[in-house]
Length: 139
Image (tube, rainbow, N blue to C red; front, side, top):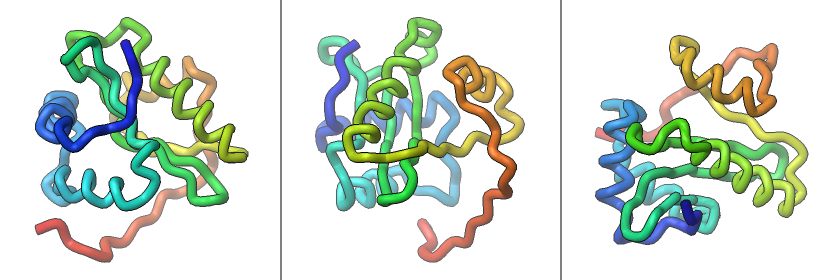
């Protein structure tokens, strides 16, 4: 798999991938999420491809204090081939190059398969409570 920055022509394939991976939610418009990401560190919106086939994504960011990863997704037909691990390694290297001391990510507590994936990569559960407040509705 080759990793490159997202390109506008990737939008429909990215959204289809997120949908098949169960990452989309009614309250988060994926097109708006992509548009928002492209205004901040667009070079950190990664896609994994083989030839013309887009099979993986990772939306990475650094706020000057912590790094974050969202929308890590691998097409189910290509899972268990270390593509997710490869994308996370690339995300970590890009964040280290920016001087990022720690990476955070959010996983739904019911998603035991993904929690196991991150545990195998050395990620541990922080003793925190995630809080959120919607500022702009994606209606």
